[in-house]
Structures are given as structure tokens and as C-alpha cells.
Length: 133
Image (cartoon, rainbow, N blue to C red; front, side, top):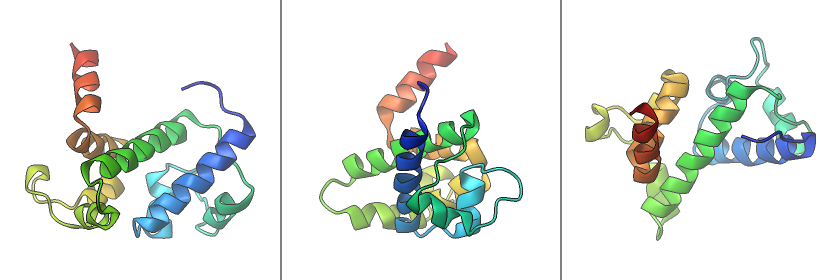
């Protein structure tokens, strides 16, 4: 990912926190999912809605990249009804060992985000398989 300005990270913060709110992810789970610094209070999320840029941390930015990729994949997987994507996130998925995708993203950290994104986005899955060869 290229170097992002404070303005870019501010815009990303607004987008991603709104996205997680829309998905029904609780504040403490949002802090964990974004790998925000240890001890980050959940009230800090409100600031990302307004004028505070996300931390300039490669791990945070990697997670943001995957979350935006998941959002895009949900949009293309369920193009006629966005609420189906929200349902999909909260329902046990047979191909994900009957786990809910939202739980995988929350509980498994970065690997969980990658798992969900790979499941939804075949082009991302293909790119990942090419990197491992």
C-alpha cells in the first residue's frame, strides 16, 4: 500500500468505522478487528467518524484493506440486495465450518479477515494462491 496522508487515513477511518457499524460489529470488537493500539478506548471510534486519522500502522492498514475488500466482495456477491450480505455475515456458513463470518473476522484477527475475503472473492483467492507458489 502506498504512503497515506493524514487526510487519507481520516477518510478511511470514517469509511471503515461506518462499515463496521453497518455490519453490527460492536465497539470493542471493532477495536480488536482493526488491531488498534493496546488500551484504545472504544470511545475513540467516535473520533474516527469525525476528524481523527487511523494510526499510521501497517497492521491497521492491512486490516482496513481486507475489510474494504470484503465489503466490495459482498456488494458484488449480493448486488441486488445489500441486506443479504449483512445476513450472510451473521449466519453460520457451511463452507466456513459452520462458523459465522463476522465471528471469524472478530475472533481470528488478520487470518480471519483473509479467510472471509478469500471465501467471497475468487480473484483475491487466486492472487493469494499465486503468491504462495
